[in-house]
Amino acid sequence: MRIGLLGTGPWAQMVHAPVLAAHDGLDLAGVWGRRPEAAKELADRHGTRAYDDVDALLADVDAVAVALPPDVQAELAVRAARAGCHLLLDKPIATTVEGGRAVVRAVEEAGVSSVVFFTTRFVPEAGDWIAEQAAVGGWFTAHAQWLGGVFVEGSDSPFATPWRREKGALWDVGPHALSVLLPVLGDVRRVTAAAPGPGDTVHVVLDHTGGASSVLTLSLTAPSAASGAGVEIHGEAGTTRLPQGGTDAFAALTRAADALRAAAADGRPHPCDAAFGLRVTEILTDAQNLLDAGPR
Image 1 (cartoon, one colour):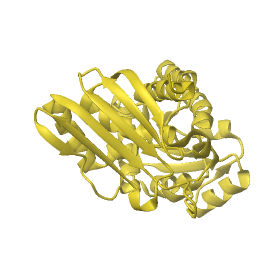
Image 2: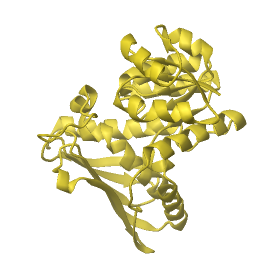
Image 3: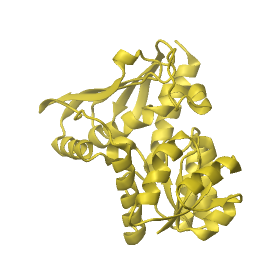
């Protein structure tokens, strides 16, 4: 499968380009970026071609991997799908419901496949745990925490990007939490509460179709000593926790690329496709609306 890379930022440089270039089943055919000089530098580093014209790249490949801010991603994902390209997307697929719907509509109309790179879902231990808990059922409540120190004083994180500063933890790490909880507890019937905490910290309460409730605690301004991610669920089977351990982003993206290749080959939707990405955006939008409305 010939694949193009859209984006030249830190995630593209650190993970996407190396993984796509090394993948046995992929041919990294080119790189496009909003900064042509950065695209050329990244393409040269991985022995491929830099494109100045994104539509020219779309015409030359079977698929694209996107490593761009979500609203830029949404617009280009629509163009790529209409050009017949399968999509390996980042999360969130968009920060508006309209943008997410446009991506899903373009995917459906073009008949292409899509996979959204929710990192945790492509870690084998986490994926196995999610499947096991979904099969057990009978869950009562859950708490998911995704805490990072991207924007604390003294941080030199490469991910302190403008879109994350604008949209905050809800939109950056909220998708990871939802990607774990939704398969286990069921879809969200209602976002029942959303409240701010210190910095960009938010607390979100969800009512799930399976009868359980959950609480998300999300932050990109947590003290470094408090950083980390975890999920704990309680129910008839007792208490269980998402397996801990370092997330190998290289291995996870490789599996996501494998999933896209498989979906493109057999035509069956992947559980983390654009439609699932849209549902995540819809839930986050409901939470954002509650936050914007303030206390009642």
